[in-house]
Image (cartoon, rainbow, N blue to C red; front, side):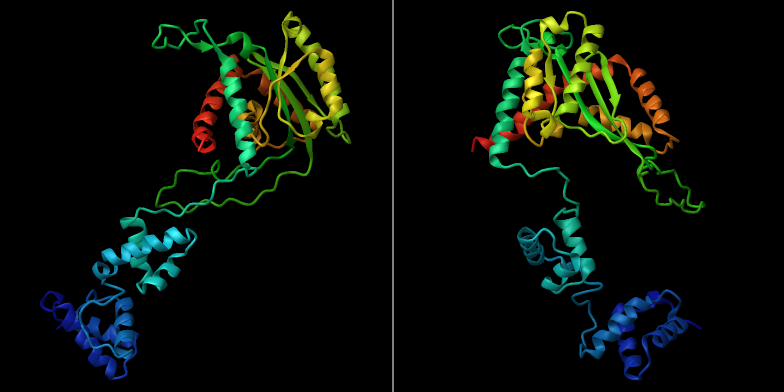
Length: 373
């Protein structure tokens, strides 16, 4: 008849393990012997292996030692302090490296790092370009100037008066004069992301499978120019065409005609162009074309997609709209994109242009303290 575990202490069970281990029983046989005598749940096989290894290494102490079953010793204040110093020196350390340095188990190292110190292992945030100090100073100066221009004494719904009683809001004339645009690739097939494929799963259901799908090689380049009330120009490149300064000037000719038709009087009042600064946008030919039209170019800091409305507001939703869809030819893809653009609510474009003010302010708050040190 098997004895009850409650009548035996851990030390007594370990003494039996030590005795049977000296009889040359391997851990598996030893575990079965313990179960037949003391019950099925007397001790786990992993713990039997652990104590057998300790006794074979010459240990005779039956109390909890450093490693399994000794979390109190492993997570001592000294180990916590040493662990924090190790992570401070190298934040890419693996758990097994921390455990080896502190001479504790990985379980104890995990408990110190996650529970005691509150660290979490995360991937680095991807950014398109590492900004130099000069880039940061330039970005800060540009954002301050643009923020100053966006302020006005006229009343705008949703804003409150300052301490002097002057009502400060957006300069609607300035913001509504901004025309922004950019180019992006559109694929005939854009596979859905892993996040898009997530579904609710019940424990009784099997795990859903997702097969890898590549973006199609067939694609077209689209150009969109828009302002606070909607799209002004939407065009695509013909097969074999590339974006260069000469082709970009042809786009401006079409954009000028679109502004004349859709925004009567705006060419006279003045157009403020916001675009980023790749080579075709900053080439001398392009600059000459814009000077001929008398358009003002809104300064744009280098490597700053976070300040380009097309990048952070328009193209993201557009790519999500195309995710999981297949198109047989360029015409079908273009028609779908154009209908999607036409169906966007007017507030979508207005919010994007007005959000530039918040982004300029956010940039100032983030870079101000760093640059002025």
